[in-house]
Structures are given as structure tokens and as C-alpha cells.
Image 1: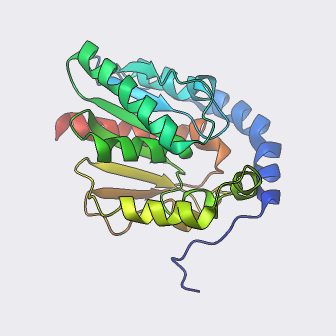
Image 2 (image 1 turned 60 degrees about the vertical axis):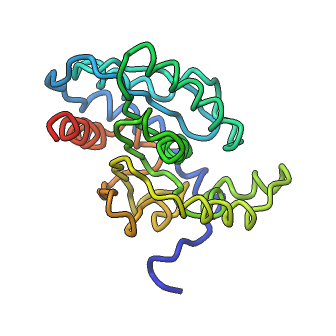
Image 3 (image 1 turned 90 degrees about the horizontal axis):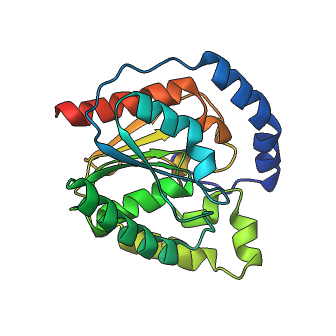
Length: 233
């Protein structure tokens, strides 16, 4: 198998991720640097990963707010993994945000939240100024994630989902996208979290676990740097 071909993630890796979550959060709080205000209230929506809601994005949203952005909750409750239904609801939510703020929004999505952000930009590029994904499954849907067995248990056909993901890729993204990924990711195979084929995409490697993506100070620094670039470009 070629090195860039995604592989299945053993569920045991997910247990390892959760085992380190408490220590990661404690370290992150201690190491967090105060961002320099750079924005003028531009709206940024933070999208949580599968099984999580807005609370999981609290630290990252706080950094966005301190950097001068208007931080927005996605407001859709717990991300239950039903991508087709969630995408429709997300697009409705983005329409409301854009109408209220009178400008396109920037999306920062963790894990499945990043995939939803990317697909929202694909569907409605007029609503989305920029997308940043954090350890997001860009290839194969849940097939190359530690959640694959849960999807199978719920009756989802992973091969069918993967085929639909490939089909959607036939419509090119018009929105600048940054994919932040890590070889230490124990939830999504790292080969599935970057996009080397899209000229609009920037891929940035970090050294942290999947669960740490929303806590790690270096990841937050990169997110803010990428947002700053979009303000200048």
C-alpha cells in the first residue's frame, strides 16, 4: 500500500486519545499565550467534532475572541455524525449568520466539524470566506477513523459513504482551505486529513494528538496566523 493511502484506525487508538485528554487540557491552559488583537469583529464559526458540541470549542473560541474576531457557536447541538442532515442545518445557520453580519463567515472545524465546514464551502462559497480544518476526515468519510465501527453498528455502509465523498470531490472548492494534521492522530488516519490535490488547499503538520487539536497552543497559533493571512490577502 502506498504511503499516502489512508488505512483503518483501530478503536483502541480512541481509548488512548481519551486517556491523555485531561493532561492535554491542563498543559494547554498553562501554556496558552494571549493573542494579539488583529481582527475587527470578523465572524468565525467554530464547528465541533463527532460526539461533541459547542463546549468542546470553548478554549479555541476564547482565543478567537481575544484576537478580535466575533466568535460564533455553531448552535446545532451535539455533532451526531449524520452529515447529510447536519450539512443542511449548517447551511441554514450560515445563511442567518451572513445576513446578520453582512459578510461571509470563516469556519474553523475540528474533526468531522472540519469536513462539514469544507462541504458547506463547496455547496455555498458565497457564504464562506475561509475554512480551517483540524484533524478532519477529508477522505473516506468515517472509514479511516476510530468511529468506523460505530457507524457500522448504526447501519451505515462505509464503502457507500466513501463513494459519495469521492463524488462530491468532482465539484472543486472555490474557498481557501487550510488543513492542520498530525501523524500522532489516533482518531483519523493522518493520510486522510490532508489534501495534496487541491491547489486552493494549504496543509500544515503539527505534533499533537487528535483530541488536543482544540487545546494545543501551537494549533491555536497556526489557526490565528491563517486567519490573519486571510485578512491581509
